[in-house]
Length: 315
Image (cartoon, rainbow, N blue to C red):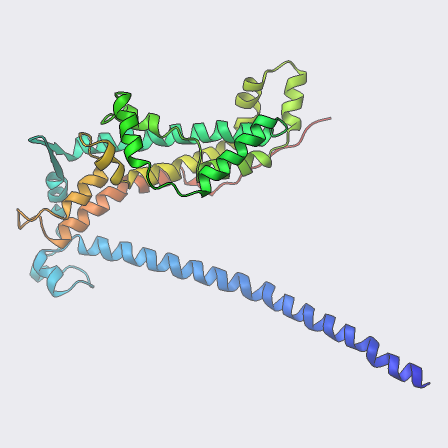
């Protein structure tokens, strides 16, 4: 009788602990998604408010901006100045060797630099990651994987002078084609993302293609790569946006081919013309710089928001 009375509390204790653990897990499962959703919604709201604030103030006169930088343009202080965008576009220029490079030419340089370098960097990362992910049974591939990890995580801060000398010796310095060639590094965050993607693609697809007589390159190009087109597009757009906003590389490697980002960087120092050196016109110039990226997102939003779906093998 006494043994039954002492064993009952001992059996109830684990059950109570289990119930408490289940309650905590239930609370975490319910609270964490809500908190995460609220955090993302708050971040998006702040981001949209900043863009809205910039758009409203880009349509003001300098006097209106100085008196009220929060609310809508005041009709008594100049009203809505859509001409600020035309003024910003015409004033966006960079002087090189006594020649003024205007916004249309800088736009072309931006498209060539961001588009060409984006495509090349994603293609080379795709090919390199495919080899390391699918042919890791080879010893030299495993050795190359170690080198890749070292180059990705070991900080190398003294390569600027070596890169300039290399491009100069090859006759590719101050050339858009040279910078695109320089982007063929293949490694970096794009490589790591594509490597993880290839690891998730079944090798059975390639084996089936080998049985049908396809070679390694044909299997990769026609069988394996189409299943990762969504990832390819997402990485290209991310890289395009990164390069579109890059002004340091044109300053260092493309002094004769400034892009729009470099023009916008110089735009803030335009103090010669009082009508241009005002916050509303400078904000309008920055918003024009972001417009192509917005258009790119709107065109490919379905691809960006889609997910990678892999089918199964028949038979």
